[in-house]
Amino acid sequence: MSDPPHNYDDLFRAIGEVTVSWSYLETAVDAWIDAIWFSWGGQALGIERPRTSLGRKLDFIRKWYGGEEKWPVLFPDLLKLTVDRIDRLSDHRHLIIHGLSLDFADFPETGITTLELVKHKRGQRLRANRAYTVSDIKALRDDTTKLAIMVGAIVEIFATDSGLIEDRDDSLVKLLSKL
Image (cartoon, rainbow, N blue to C red; front, side, top):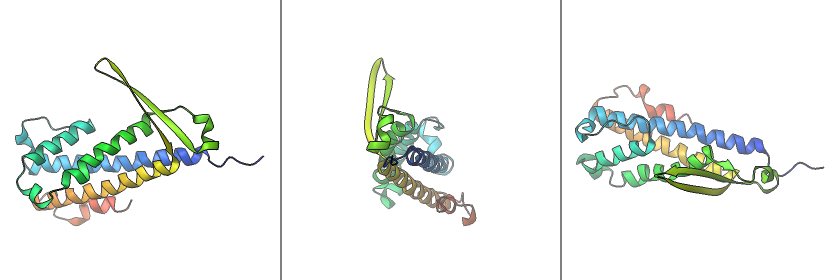
């Protein structure tokens, strides 16, 4: 009997790699929020500095950017290239990390796993599901890693401009470039 064309180890490895790459991205987003909060008027927004929810973090960055004069001129597509993209990818990450595989036993033969997640929001039961291959999951890992590096570079520009970073050996970009 021959081995099936797909194996669970590849699937689990790809999911783990998404988890790790996403932690780098969230670290970069947190550093961005710190740079905004401590050096670019984030405290003047009149809202609490977000610490946990990714949605609140992205909303905070959007609100700050909307009231900013300097950065939208220098980086007019900043939100589209980063925050909006993170928002879109986060739905996939959430489904991949927290979703239940509906066809787990069939994966070795098909190479596809359909992940489903049920959320309860405001008294409604919301279902999300999507089929993924290992290649799809690895593509998410790659996109997440690239975004982490991009956001890290933005943070470095902000932090260098404000004097938070003086020594480039301490830079987030240096750390993220090792990915």
